[in-house]
Image (cartoon, rainbow, N blue to C red; front, side, top):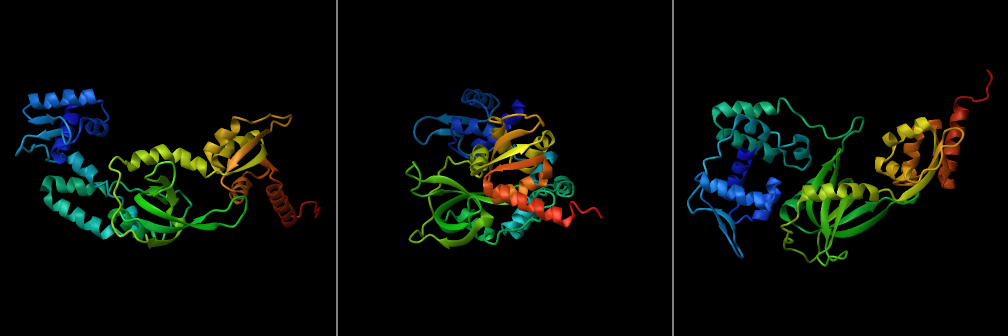
Length: 342
């Protein structure tokens, strides 16, 4: 384990001269004290790692020195080819560039490694969308990807879902697009809205790309925006994912659920909403039913989701949603001739 970490540290210092102890610690997921000890271990092994203090300092290799640790192991060559996700690259308009890069990379590998690398794509495939969901590529995704690559501020038109059955509304936002995330077959753009929020530099926002209805060059902003060098897309997404999912739950419905319906509830609505609702649940009543104030995305969404539970759930409020279920029940009863003795 430590030997692997030392190799990674040596390659990191070689590829990023001036990298700080804090940056190495974050990259290798160790403490800064461990970084200092590993630097000494590299020096003892003959790798001339130097630590320079002050502004512009950091870790560097001695001038003219390069490690000889860049030869790939077969397992490394295999996993390297897994880093490209064919479907995602195609959606982003990068399939041709990725194919050319793989060919060039293959040409640089030793013959003994070439077969190992190419075999990985015959053994592993990522299919991101969930079952029974037809994947769709947002029309503006490739253009938005180009803006991400070029650090270009854009003005986007966004269809914001209506609340409690209201019609969607369209808003426009200036956005510095920092990255794209593919989550369960749905693309999201993460960026900063200049001048919004408490931070003078802007507020971080996440938008579903399939709800972006227009994308235009930002008026008067011809130069690339300056990226925050400390921004880590993966870490940001992980930290915000739960909060983002909860932010989608803007409406509350009151339901009475059977014991069987309660077990099935997390499979049809947002599990985080169920966990929150259980904290204030009342019951069970004499029939074993529990009453919940359940956070949902919108009344329309709740109607589609809760309908899957059939008679295992009863909507108590809001009255408009209860009326919709009453009308659905009446239509189903008429369809199947409830009360018809024939």
